Length: 141
Image 1 (tube, rainbow, N blue to C red):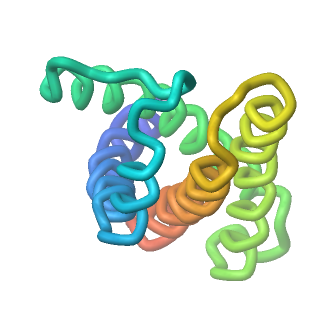
Image 2 (image 1 turned 30 degrees about the horizontal axis):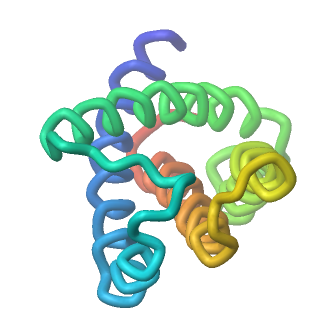
């Protein structure tokens, strides 16, 4: 199972990074971030390349965990390779991945609320992308 997590995790990690990049670079989200520019809770990255490398590496760890969780959890469903099972797993993983971060940032930081909503929505979409990509790939149930 370790090899499956590594191989499929890298594949869906690249897909996730591309989709999330598009989500964050769309005009609506870009405008929300531009309005928040200079807020004390936002870090300014001098080197965009360094930021992207660190972002990919950090999220890739999450993708490996999500991949392992999907491969493990699906065996507990009546139809392990079914779309319904994948959607339920995506909901479970979204709730455990996105909500705690959202809640902690809401109550412990001064991070702008509109950006928290962006994080919540994009994090949920990103989790669904990972799980549904795994569902589409020829990963044996």
